[in-house]
Picture 1 (spheres, helix red, strand yellow):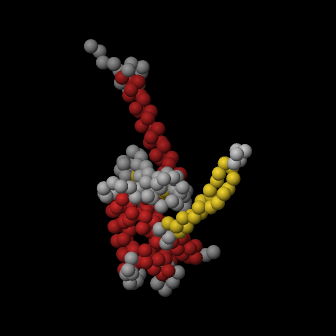
Picture 2 (cartoon, one colour):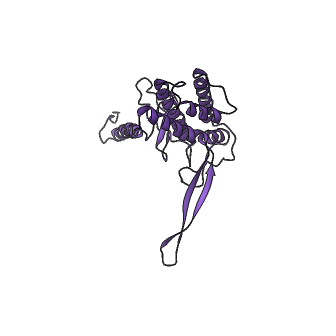
Picture 3 (cartoon, one colour):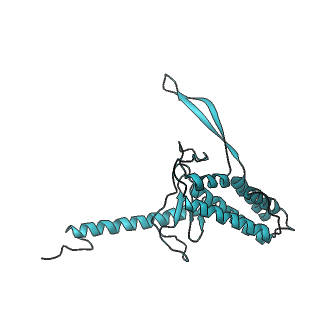
Length: 237
């Protein structure tokens, strides 16, 4: 497969995750009297695409009854106000509209339709150049990863106290991590980390290093104050 064909294939996969509904098939087991595990059936469930789920989260928040990756979040009975999800939806909408404008594509009747339109246009070299296809692939990946990280599956995204590892950002408290899907993004600089290129492992090492360093500093301060050596000493008098 050529480089352009690979880009188009990735773009279409990202677009499908964002815009199209999908089905999950989960095996159902039971334990027999003899203690053996027996497959008794398969539970099939239909789910909306990530953009619809993101909209649900923006309105209702997110929770889930299980840890099954791919399960649609169950809206909570709590006041709306998941502002980061709202902001992300607005950003993706604006970025998709910008791409349609640059490529001379008409606006469709929904955000999902515009995303599908971009994916279709990516396969037409007369509409989308190679450089544009590469940039669109990065944008689609960013939309998908940021949506996944914001949605989560069983809880709100993990928000480590670590700084963003991007040199030009470096701000603390801006990382949002979906631990189950192994995806993350920074709400400041919009950088993304996932398993596509293994970048999520680099981010995990960065967070771990800062967390461990903070823990060591905390222990030293506490032990020093209690008179067991460390950064502080018991004051005289």
